[in-house]
Image (cartoon, rainbow, N blue to C red):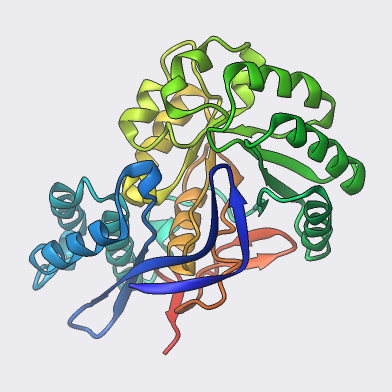
Length: 347
């Protein structure tokens, strides 16, 4: 386990985040080639804590993989899933390490193992809950760095959220994309009022505005509003993705995170469900190492329904144990072209 401080602590609805801890997985083949993975549990979403993740890796990693043939990598991953199914971030870390090794063995980027559909896409960058002047300053700073899409954390006080977004739109102009993340902080009435008062701001999407337990109230919202809402905490597995296709659909967008669903393979199952239902995809993250951000980007690039990236989770780390994995250029993320996940350990 490695503690990683954030350069810019931030607040979301309900708590402040100043540092993070990730668990890292290193697998070495008998050829000497290494594959890497990283876990960033989100216990408030999946119930998996950092100790849970560590205990699961300690208990099962060697038994699942030591001495096994990498040519049967899908069977290896299935075996890992049978014992780690209740620890999704641990499973994701193991799976990405295996796929990193497989990609290196075939000299292919991981995205190409599943059929790449995209080469580069813009990502949003996140502004946490803070006062208006700080938010405006941070927005201008991000724009000066080349970002063209801002995601603003909201959900504490709707009236203040509305004022902030109007000020932001006035400041950044019409060409900067604005997204908001409610982090389950609104009621249904809050959301309807918020939508009415921000309609002229052309927000791209509204992420998880209502609590997880309010899925049925989400289904009663107007069609146009539900189409712009992205499910996050409600969408943690292929089963969730399938359930939320039942009409009336509560979300027109799914936010897929590897740490929620257990890795690239289940994420792509969710992506296939979304594609068949005409639901757009957003790929998100926790605060994470470049290893797992790269893994999420490979998955996103292999899904035809991908429209939105929110893969900024490594940008604000004070240090990381890895480099590479992706290239950030003028707010767009693209893969490096290197095999596997494309990451290199910093010794």
